[in-house]
Length: 280
Image 1: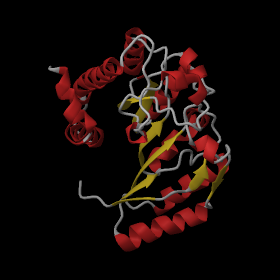
Image 2: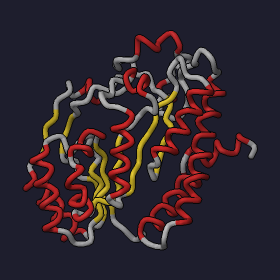
Image 3: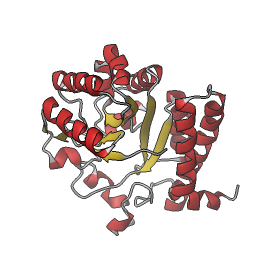
Image 4: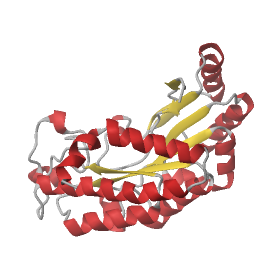
């Protein structure tokens, strides 16, 4: 509440190999970043001259260089003036930094998104995630233990998707226990590595619909409407379960943050319109 938010992009590129993603193709799996000193100059300009108190770091992987990232954290700590940071990174880098996650929190980082993307090892391998289910779960546990808000996503909608595989993903999402989970529908961009594999199952060719929400692939065992309804049920069940957890938290920053965020999701996102279709 009463905040002024900006984003500072500290790097370009991504070295990962996710088969459904455009970024690794566009950047040819390379990364480059601004210096920690430049990051500090930008942050000071925004916070001291313009009253900014929330900074979003929108990079796919701002943590790609450990030494550079640790210096950025040190500079955040030195210049901290009640500034909150929101960011995303990878499971692997959270595991790498397990010993300094308290530094993340000290620097003012309050919210971290990591792309888990799948609940089972076979699907992780399909997506070329180069990590294990256990590593994904451990990264979220580390973020939660550091008292940082955790967020992740699960990509659904491959041609072999079934009601049972979606139910498994939902069950695992609860076990992983992120503060926020997104259940996204696969978007088969023509330049992604997965495209040729899923092309025979694509039914929607209007790229306006390629938004991670609307189904464009028809799985062999489900209709597009059925998979969309199943995804909506994932959201509904996950957040009904999460709401009880949040209500049980002691009054304070995280409880208030979570309550406000869930309210925004339910009233201002695609969920507001579509959850009504469940008739419940």
